[in-house]
Length: 238
Ligand code: FPP
Image (cartoon, rainbow, N blue to C red; front, side, top):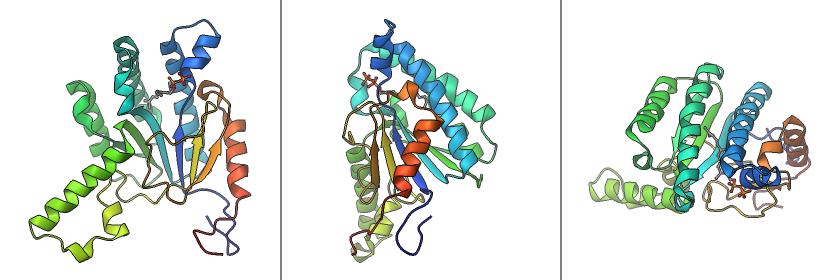
């Protein structure tokens, strides 16, 4: 919500880069996959809190196209977590939540892919918070995919070149129908976007924290929201 003086109270769309699971585990002498397991539990808790406080769109970076380069056993552990948590989230989350997966699903096993498609289909008509989970997602990939779809529509005569605008192009992205990101949170002490929602973050406010993702809790989320509420957003104006 934006007040008339440009002050924002609650972001409509929050993006979250859940970084620091591996370091969290290493500090405790545990394998990295246990850091991801703790991170998945935090993902669920933060989702519930955002839903309760009235966030309309929440997008997590769960697995990037670059994460495919990680060792097989870490990737397998992540795939097991996705499988388990997608079922948990789907069963426990407020039944009004709409789930959308961003990215190329063809990378995943047939059973995980089917689960993702079923959850999307069954929640399509839900009118509460939209929870988007980026899995096998890359921002550049997203833009190329949208460009190809646009080119196909133009070459087949369904769209005119003059009709390509920021709005129509946004509707070709994986996040079609969702507003741009208002607040992007990154944990784990790195100050970069790492190819996440690069188009959608054109006017996002950024919040970086050294807190490792498994330690991120309601108090930390409140700090991010307070920081956001203190910013004046001018969107290029004065
Ligand atoms: C980055 O930390 C985190 C990831 C690559 C995976 C995040 C995934 C989850 C928390 C599971 C979420 C589950 C669902 C169902 C969405 P890192 O491994 O890069 O940490 P490091 O920088 O300390 O090594």
